[in-house]
Length: 255
Ligand SMILES: [Zn+2]
Ligand SMILES: [Zn+2]
Image 1 (cartoon, rainbow, N blue to C red):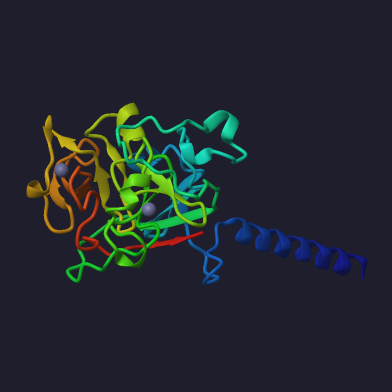
Image 2 (image 1 turned 45 degrees about the horizontal axis):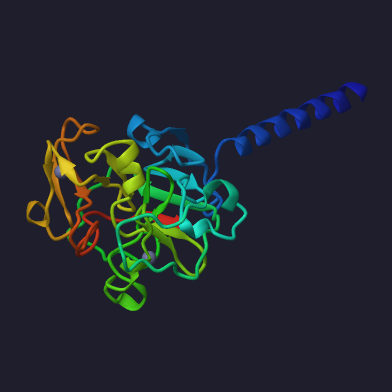
């Protein structure tokens, strides 16, 4: 009898250990299925502002708090003011500080690990359409309601960004702090379709809209993709970052 009880206890302990092992493997809470996670390839490790980057199934998962590590006038009056506030010192004489202030978010981007063209070229969303190396969101070329950025541009600070009403800081144009610490031809981040975004120059030449297709990208070899890849570029002319939609199929972003 004692032996049978001991055997049962042993079995229960073994089952518990198995269940705990299964739970400790990363599981996708939305579907309940277990998804294998692994280390992200080197190019994604360049997203230095991410709090976590890993591969989950066919997606790269990038987590960030969405807040720029560089200074900004939009840190005025926030808990980070003493270390990160900097008055506007850019070249735009019409700069106007908008009433929004920078807040943190818990952002989770899931982008395709192996991006591919989607010939229907889905529209980019309002809100985050990609993520920069510093973990800040990329937004598209429209202001609220699909209006052009004409007026919003005057609230872009010296590093090219501003916060929206909920305090989410974002770039519609070149994130100039990143190009200043890296280079004008660096990779700058990824759009939700998994294709990378590069700086305003390539092979020593400034990239113009004439070099790009209607999605604001082209195919070519880059420092990070020696076999070539479709990639977007930022440029100084509208639409700045993305044109008529994604080249590929977008993943998801939640926050
Ligand atoms: Zn904006
Ligand atoms: Zn290029």
